[in-house]
Length: 299
Image (tube, rainbow, N blue to C red; front, side, top):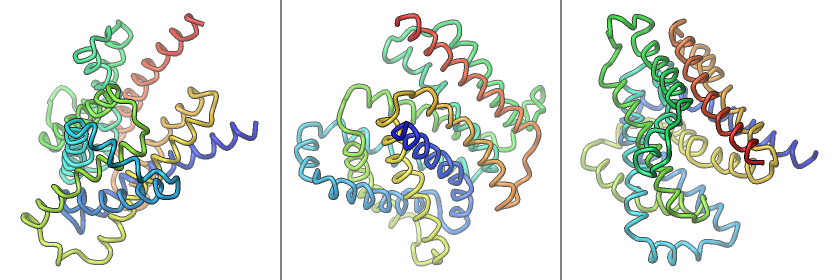
């Protein structure tokens, strides 16, 4: 019981922290470009992850892992964090966060579609139903409920938000091909991405114009979106014997995020956004229900 309680508290802490990042994204974008955000947040996250490996006495594992799988980590690191977060932050720049954040939750649906294409996994009837719920929710959010007019707040912003979900799903599909320890993998991915991000940011942006508020905000993003929260979630998954119970906590995150966006930065939360988010969550629940039913049947 003590172990399960610890796992629950760690997972709850991760979910609560993840609920704050949409607000942090919008605040940071007041002071930095998406490229600067990716660069600075990646450095913060890299320092944290390297600190974790130092404490664990595992820094010596980095070089052999890199030497053995150079091409793999080059692709993975350019995908995440560099390209994925660059596109995600640009979507947040173009859209209200109350729209961009729920759209990003369709990544699990995107993962189902991509697994069918690239891994040969069968897409079942229940998966298609989940996709229908999810992307109908996207339509409600993107059009603010006027789904028949197909009039989007920002067509490019919506397209980028959806593209980011397929990039994130692609990152996890690539991860299925390689079973390295997750913190080690992330540390190597950030090690690859940072030189590219730094070079691009010094060419196409002006760091001298970033005020101290921007540095504080981006440090928060780097620590709690990319670093500490991920480690908390991994630890919770490792401790628990009831993964389904812990995983269900993630469904409260987008609703808390909407409340924070309204309270902290004053975004207007349209009823269509809440309804669309409910449709997306319904689709995700349908997907999880299928997996649990199948596992129970196999048992």
